[in-house]
Length: 178
Picture 1 (tube, rainbow, N blue to C red):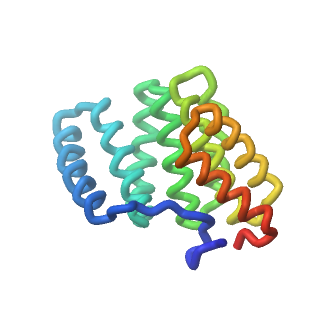
Picture 2: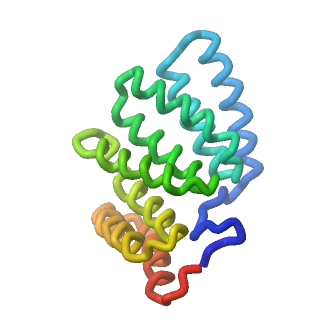
């Protein structure tokens, strides 16, 4: 079912207060990394804070941080981190209702992931992209993404993520993913 904000099976923090406290601490560390011109640490923190803000439903705050992280990952030539940031930025754009931009970023993440450590995240990219497709009404494309994600998740044998993808496929099979 699509939520009131138009999202499909959106993930929120189990403990938003604890995550918000972690964000405050990470922002303090981010300020320090900026002051120290520590680009590698800054990249990690920008991505961490951006991803956490998105999970807290604060994607408007996350998007500029993740955009900065994307530029920095490219400047540093860190392909694995670039793929991670692309996925997080795509998710932020998705929740901002900018789904075409999100799809372009998901596609770029999938194109850049093979051959680097980020390929381990293939199932997350596919699952998140599938949710975005559902929100766009592209059910066949969504199903394809979820089916691919499920294959990877079964091979990793992670029951939590397997169940998440199976719920998404079941919602599509019911004919009423909204």
